[in-house]
Image: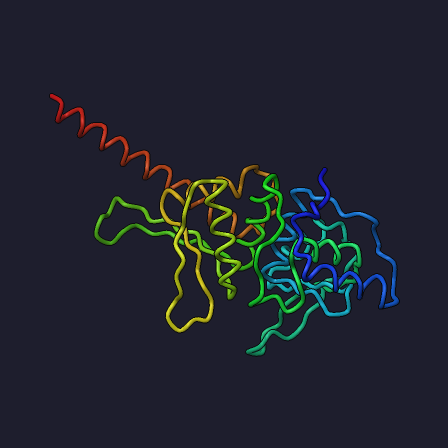
Length: 258
């Protein structure tokens, strides 16, 4: 297992927060002395990055989701199954579920990664080890990501498959896009939907296929089941469509050679 690499930390946010939490503000001791990187924790960090909140008190963390099973998976990943999942109002008279808890050790770890309170538009570079990067990306996808697919209305045999990530922070989108490109060699495209305040980092066709394979690298990785099933169903059809296109092109080349 790996501990966080402190030379990759955002010291401008880490130092004052740690001093406030550990030195200036009296409070409970951390529930754990050290927090170690793992695939499960990386996935949880991805969820916190999108749908989580670090409170200004230096110890409280929360995650909000409309999917109870996602919160249950999240709590298992951070080894906090003792935390209660409760309901709260979510606007338009809807009820949403969330988990809120105190964990000084995890809070300090998240600060070292680069997360901060009120992070929506200030999110930037994060210290995520390459070894656990795709687990982290899967957490982002289960938070503010989506996939969609369809057969082209003009080219009937062409199957379109897209994976996208939404964020209100341009700096974070730039970092994520560059990190994916550096590790996987896929570029993606950044755009803004009309009337929306957030950016979309989108991967299409072969890039979406490659990204889905990387996110779901094993059958038993923690994931939101409804998004996993949808993405893997589209992945299967996209791979079959790509194989059929390659076969037709091969036959055409053979025909021309005769």
